[in-house]
Amino acid sequence: MVKERARILVVGGGYVGMYTALRLQRKLKKELSRGEAEITVVSPDPYMTYQPFLPEAAAGSISPRHVVVPLRRVLDRCRVVIGEATAIDHAKRTASLTTLATEEEGTGSEQLVYDELVLAPGSVSRTLPVPGLAEHGIGFKTVEEAIGLRNHVIEQMDIASSTRDPAVRDAALTFVFVGGGYAGVEALAELEDMARYTARYYHNIRPEDMKWILVEASDRILPEVGEEMGRYTVTQLRRRNIDLRLNTRLESCADRVAVLSDGARFPTRTVVWTAGVKPHPILAATDLPLTGRGRLKCTAELAVDGAPHAWAAGDAAAVPDVTAEEAGRECAPNAQHAVRQAKVLGDNIAHTLRGEPLQTYSHAYVGSVASLGLHKGVAHVYGRRLKGYPAWFMHRVYHLSRVPTFNRKARVLAEWTLSGLFKREIVSLGSLEHPRAEFELAAGGKPPHHPTDDPKGSS
Image (tube, rainbow, N blue to C red; front, top):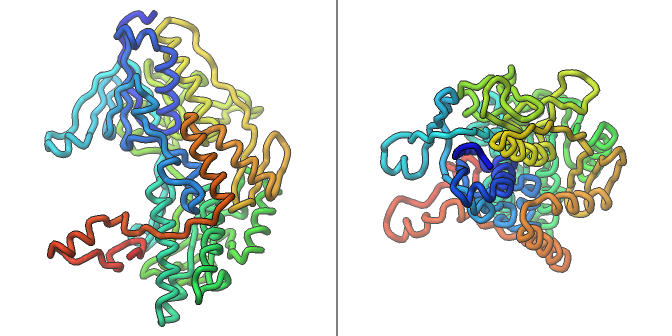
């Protein structure tokens, strides 16, 4: 039994936030029913996004609603607040929150008092001061961005098919991706595979007409799967006429022209930015200790170093890797560690409330898998290297086992089965991004959305 009533605040509804709250409501089931503990989860979205499925959602292999897990359904013993933490004063055990209601009321942020704090806000896209990036760049961290990018790619094919201007056609069929990590390579590979299939339904577009360009500042891609698998991936993508430019940076994309550091210039209406992430800004708005890279200093028990009753894991936390041979190494900020850290984190909070000893987080990295399109992939798991179909199959099996809830597993498996029996869906639903445009025009309101106003170039 806990010594006194405990108010637990979980900031973030991603991997760590959702899994920690899920673990806590299981471990503290009796305490929650007796009113001895309460768990509040603050998240800007009412769902957790399973990000490894974003490339397949963009390619149409999985429905968008099956890529997300509704927090209120999974965390039925927690209080879920849709909003954002703007500041945290851990010395006073208070957090400042803004919600949809506070915006409507105009009363400013509200104060929430807590006893135990779990900081799991995740990360945000790391951008550089590249001219034109803010106006024309497209991210790839959310399900909205993934589906918007899919719609955008198909719309560009529609534009290219109907225009008589060769310059417009060339720009519409040129797709530039910046960043050679998981997000960039998988997104490009899946969308190129989808667009190649879609081209068969256009009378005047061939796969060879499209230019797919991957820009990476280092000398390799997919470092997580090892150097050999990275070289194999480069070879496979180039065989698909994908232009890979290593040791190259994007210097500008102003005026819809991608200018690279090697002097190449590509008129394009599509620049996808996946060049890394950085810690969430909320970390800088706390009184908790941070590392030089802006992450929370944590112990191997996932407690914030020097801050009692504060906990963290995942992208926001610098957790010592006790399995590493080198002293001072930290756990990589990836989903594999985040899910396992959340389990230990939830257990340790329950142990703290009950006065029990804490566990140390220890997990050796087992490997990585990556999809390169339908029936294509690479994997490096337990020291074994897989290519092609076996790697793609392992990619699906692994992520199907990791996606939360049996409900989501069954729905994703059903969609994969149906997609193997029937043809791909190639329809664009770009109007979803501006659902009131048609009604506004009919009602005599402002004119419909103009393509030049859209940073993605969508109609």
